[in-house]
Image (cartoon, rainbow, N blue to C red):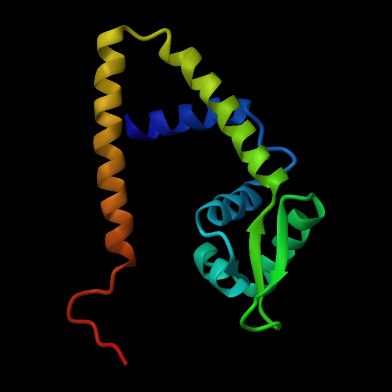
Length: 145
């Protein structure tokens, strides 16, 4: 059932096209939205990618006006990545279009089922946040330098 729900959600979200950004570029925008001013290496690590590949992704996003690169005040050799106003507007518009698609589906559900879904999704978000937090924490008993 969860895979079916995930697939249907992808179909609905697909109706709200991410063009002109690819799925990989969208991930970059979402990361920058939450980690404004990170450097390229940190972004590459977040994407589980290489700095050259990540740099090319950022080149395309910068050319589209979604990302700005700014020299770090601490080290002029290091560039900090920021979501531009256009990038923020793109994400807001994408979210609005996705929400409209979801609202259309939710409107067809009985009120009691919508309430149960919201409660379930709140519990899911809490559990997912814990899982993400636990995945980022060092394992117990692991050694550090």
